Image (cartoon, rainbow, N blue to C red; front, side):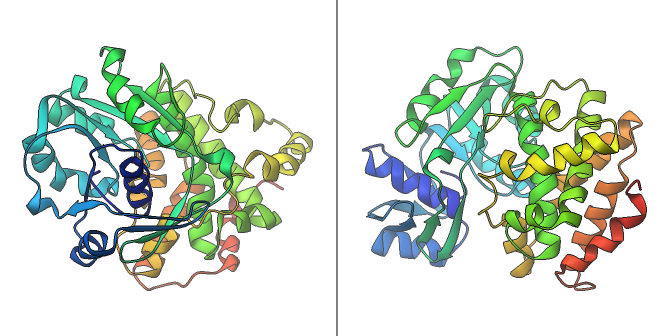
Length: 335
């Protein structure tokens, strides 16, 4: 478990509790010490205290058959030498991260040694050695896949491991799955981080819900230009559900968005937590990725460009969290 933040702590506790031989790796020495001293304390949807093994990256030893990668994506470049050193010859790294990290990992490790997956549940770290797993129960699910041209049987050990906690469904098109999750992060996590609330705050505010829809629309347009076939996620084909061509159809789509994203409403974006704690956030790997790919493909992304700028201004201390930042998008919205 490389990257034992909130998700890694919950997953590491669950897998250890199931009898799997798991080691949690974190750069946070205080967190590692608390895990080794008192176990992983999980609250919320589960109430567990599980004795676990934890270490820092410098303390890793031996070789691992499966490495579940849960760091922030911008930490991957620094982590890659250590992953390569400690991955068994026939081992596999499964990236359970936001964004689309697999191409970078495959370039360094080899495509047949890389898999990826989408986490549909949310957790928040509440202290050293502690994490809260958020409801609902139905959200406990993984979708996993391998890169094109690789043997799908390589996923078997990843699937077997993850299913010790909750269902893990293989998909044929990993990149299509990645782009579908990117839609949610770009359109909900990013604006929620700008206004300073849960994802539900975006859905409840008519102004921000409309902004989210146009963020989504740009992401879908960029993905289609890049040849992406979006995979269903959370039970929905979002490009089909959110398509519109008239203002009347737009209103119909806006009305059903709270239902489509109900599972995400309670989530506190990790981007917001990073901004609040003055840590680097993943905006470049999320909305920033949409902007860069749009530029490469000739697809304008003014909504995502604006969102990226606002997040970076908040990170730099030039702006504060506020729902009133919606005015920054007003001129972009059709009347």
